[in-house]
Length: 436
Image (cartoon, rainbow, N blue to C red; front, side, top):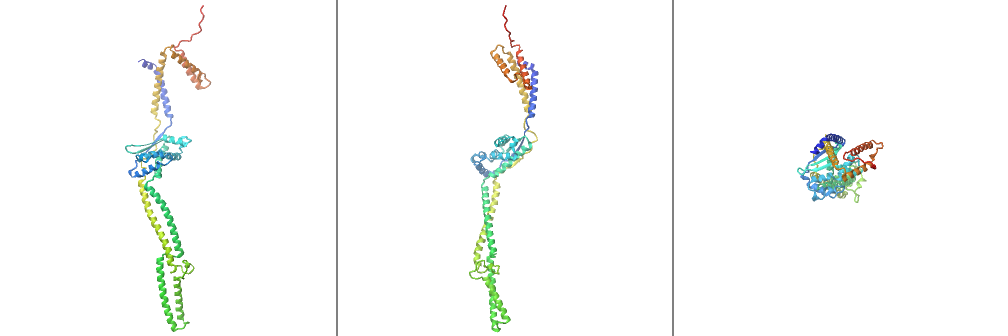
């Protein structure tokens, strides 16, 4: 009851302290910079991506740049959601975001490590154990940048998962891509050689050309035999200078020349038709051309067949890879926050008010307790001596023109004067006069 009476008597001082605490809390709450939070949520990866996530975990366990501690051992990864959380906190993702938003300048950091620490402090990612939903929260002074950083986390997660995915379908697709490139080069080379050979030797289709040339040679041979028979009959009747004899003789000669062109000369090279008037190969050269033609044609067809087969398998591998790829599905996209998340102004003001009241209460009760202690108490005497000695050596002992020092000097002087004029403190005794 005595303490309550003491506090009631000092209610004016308590009111001033409460007002001062309220004012200080209000100023502090409005001087602290505002911060905004933007949250995005991801759906848990589906069951079709389990094999892809297992292979991804195996790779990230060996990768550097902070990813080695992300996935850990393959047996240590319980689910793909935990792996996603680890990837989001990796140095690779953080470095990409720092470079993307120039966070070193935003945070006022000189080193990458300091910027990573700041980014980690302003980012929070967790997984709901019951639903498996992954939440990513980004905090920043700019609401637009907070939403952009949260959305960028999803984009970088998607890119990194696609880069590190090593499922069977992915490895098959990579292998088929390399094989397709090699087979395409072989096919182009074979087609080029085949077209050059066919163009140089006019070998469009050796089989059909041979059949057509044999038919043409047989026709010419029949016409030549008939013309020779007619010529012999005319030579029995007419002289060699007869017009009919000379006409049949010229036709027989022309038929022989045509047969010679089709047949060719023995030992003639395969491209000898280029030196003659005939644009087509001779019958003697067709077998030789047919071997090379067949080899080039077969090689071209083989490469075409291999290319078509690999193309079909490549498309199937792409579809399978898309099924096994760990997909990042956005449940709630990041939105620009409308209200600040920090500081909690009401909490700060209330806390400052309570601290001011508690501090003034402790001061009043402590001061009353101090005044109740006997003046002759050794502890009180020692405390006063230490206080006066320290106070005399403090910078504010005498003002030197500074307003702050002058104010502190007045406060300490008033406090010292009160302690001196305290009735519990004995007055200083003057010199003892000698008795008469």
